[in-house]
Length: 289
Image (tube, rainbow, N blue to C red; front, top):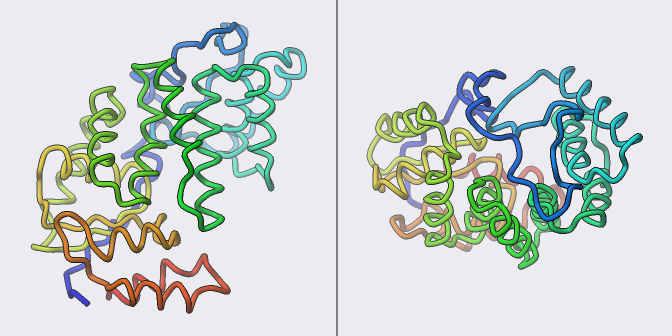
C-alpha cells in the first residue's frame, strides 16, 4: 500500500462556492428546445429549476416549485419539459421516493423523446441505477447523453453524465475530453476553477485529495487534467467510493499514480462489505489512513 498525505475538503461544496440564486443568472437553466413545442419553456410556466451545481435554493423553495410544476402539469400534461423540472424540484427538496424519478422522466420521454433536458435526466437516472446495482454504466447512458448533445450542442450538462461514467470506468481520455467540453461550454465558473487550483496547490507532494460534490471535484479535476496542474495529486471522489468499479480504477492505478491500494486489497474490502455496500467508502478511507 502506498502511503501518502491525505487532504480532505472539509466543506464539500456540492451546491457551489457560496451559491446563491443570483449565481445562476449567467447560465441557462435548460438547453435550447428540441424538435417539439412539448420541450419549449414558455413565460406562463413556473420558474425553471437549475442544477444544484449552478444554483442552490432552500428545501422549502424547491418544495414550492414542485407544487407549482405539479399544478401546471395537471393543466398542461403534454408539457414534457415540465416533468424534468418537477423531478428536479422533488429531488432537491428531498421529497422524491422510490422510483418516482424514473416514472416521471419516462412519462416525459414518452411525450417527447427528442427533448434534450429529458434525455439528459433519463441518462442521469440510468447512470444512478447502474451504480446502485453495482454494474458499470451501460451504453444507453452514453447514447442518451450524446443525443442530448447533438440536439443542444452548446449545453454543458450532458457532458456531466459522460464525465461521471468515464470516472467510474477509469477512462482517463474520456475524463479529459468531457472536462474540456464542460470548460468550453461554460460549465465551471472562474471562481470555482480558482478554488480547484487552490485545493491542488495547497496539498503536499503525492497527496490524496478527497472531494465529495460536483463543485469541489470537477474544478480540481479540470485544473489538473486539462491544464496540467499538480499531476502528482490523486483526486478521489468520496461520493463514488461506494462504487467498487470506481474504487478499483482510481485507487489501484491511474495514468500518473501506481495507486495507494492493490487490486487484492480493494477486492478484500468489497468482499468484507458485501452485506452493507453503502459502508464501502469509510472502509476504504480508513484503510488509506
